[in-house]
Length: 348
Figure (cartoon, rainbow, N blue to C red):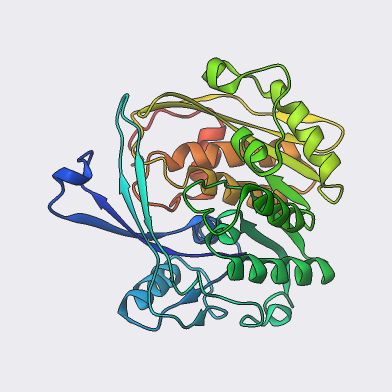
């Protein structure tokens, strides 16, 4: 199994304890995480050789983020240093009918100020088989978008499989208008072999909507087949894409979600069972854990898209039981849930 490379920003996450609101907090729990670093941690847990590429400030907080990756078994040799600060985000965890809130403080972070030419991508990709980026990276700044474009172009030239999680973040896209955003994301995604996104990602980035349904009104009753039109439209727009994947989250409340996924390979639509996730511990990183599971599944079972998709959904289902950004589960734990054992019994 060839090395996987992920590229993006790792941040300091500060969250009030339990379900306290920001205004009630006297202290904050500290976690380090980000979309692409979370994928890297998942893959390392599954025994995959994985590099995380980012730009960190050369200070104590940057070192803490670096140590977090190292202790999870992620290769950090291609991380570069510079800038003055690590990006921060504040998380208020919702419950029942009150949704979670995120406040970003990442302007002028080290990663926000990364530029093309800072990373030696040919060296990074020389023994890699897979490269993953997300729509969060180009959202933080024009220079980060340019660096990401440099990376996908070189990866594609070197025959590396490129994947993306479109990850639309309304609070981040502030440096350009919607038309420019679509242009940026369209060019980046055109280099991708594997595209993951939900209905909001496809609509907000590319104006692509499911035909004949309203996700907002039908909620957790939406079936995977309803997104076949989205997958077909995405493949038409991005001919290089070999697989388009959509996660299906039904939000019954902040504490109870349904979770499933579909994968379209251009000929057949694969769909998973629907999980009921009740009493959610932490849903942040749910999509990242899905992507980590999917990449592992596609590498481990290259001829079995159904197995890869089932693994991804089960892995991300388990992530909702784990505090923090990253999915700290093993292959055996995922396969146990895939096999139908959701009892949560003590392993003695």
